[in-house]
Amino acid sequence: MQTQTDADPSYTAPPVLTVTALNQQVARLLERSFPLVWIGGEISNFTRAGSGHWYFTLKDEAAQVRAVMFRGRAQFAGFIPREGDKVEVRALVTLYGARGDYQINVEAIRRAGVGQLYEAFLRLKDKLTAQGLFDQERKRALPLFARSIGIVTSPQAAALRDVLTALRRRAPHVNIVLYPAPVQGQFAADKIAEAIMLASTRAEVDLLLVCRGGGSIEDLWCFNEECVARAIVACRIPVISGVGHETDFTIADFAADMRAATPTAAAELAATARADWLASLETDAWDLKRAMERILSDANQNLDNYSRRLLSPSAQIAHQRLKLGSMAAALTHAVRAPLARQGIVLAQLQQRWMRHRPDVRALREKIASEQRHLNASLCNQIKQRRDALQALAAQLELLNPQRTLERGYAIVRDAKGRVLRAPGQIKVNQQLHVRLAEGSAEVNVAGVQSLLE
Image (cartoon, rainbow, N blue to C red; front, top):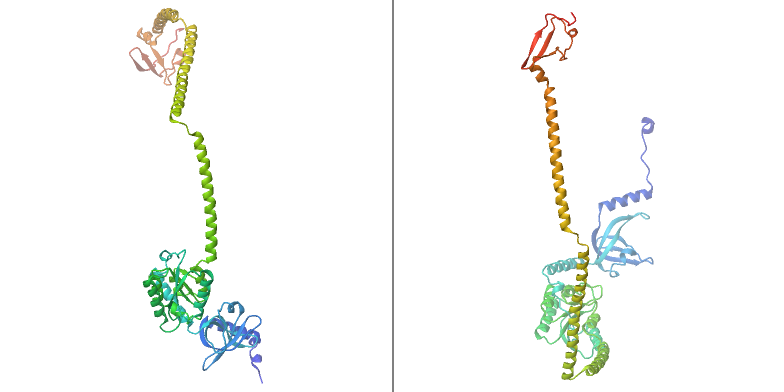
């Protein structure tokens, strides 16, 4: 029997994957196909390993899936799940390669329904922020010394006991007024808003605390209602919000004039400790006493100085008259002495100037004599130069070629412009140029004769 390899020599067998490679490819396929997604279900088989990682099963009525949440993510969960808890997880679908088990890697976890509540919380927060209810410019300063403090909370709340204990310890002199209202339940938000408005209307306290102990987001939800935020903003009394624990934030915290991390912290912000006030008063009294003693000491010294300097009016007038006479004499001396010195200097300068002053009249006569000699010399030189110029002009006139031409002579040039002086320079039939006294002529030579012939 012939196999496919024998029939086709170019045939290549498919690659053989290892189990590890197969699981890795399946894991990458799952991670690419399913991005981070929120999944809801019930906690089962929850285990917290010594490494800090969480391992559990997330299930519903018909199916289940293994889940793991590593320590780096679990430490920010805010709570530890228990068996049967309804939760929502944000997870990445993947495969645990060592066992080939399909599972989810959890990035975040929250109690079921918290997601919708948190979204509602953010929407209301953005709305009230846009309307300016949370602006810092709107918020009021807390009174420095509150004589009476109002508390809006449930009479059965543990937060009330914490607040009262803190106020009795820090400020037993402060009057406490309770405005009871439920802090959990269906109509709790309306009751809290009514209690806040009642305190604002009665205006019998200097400061108002709105407080409640810790709990889940559902337990604290009444403090996230819009009616409570608007009642806090409309209240004419400064409001401190102390709801939940340090990590809990509610809409009431943003609307209040001051947010406290806990109800006990709200009580500490509301009233300065009585011992601190007494210590501050004692320090201020001591500083005031020292300041008064220093002022009195300075005043006594100034009084002694003024008493020693005090004189009778007649003595003061006589003293001022002597001082005025001395100043007048000094002024007279100050004016006359410089004038006298300047007069002496001026006289000395005049004498020096007279000694060095030149004899102007003799110099003027000398200049006039020199000017006369100069004029006479110039006239003589001009006359001599004029006579010499006339003689040269006469000689130049005698040598003028034009005068020679006027006596009947002529200048003969050949075609190249050369002056001809001997018959030997002239040829028969040569064309010559003759310059005459009153013009010129072109002549043709018929014959040439020498003076020796």
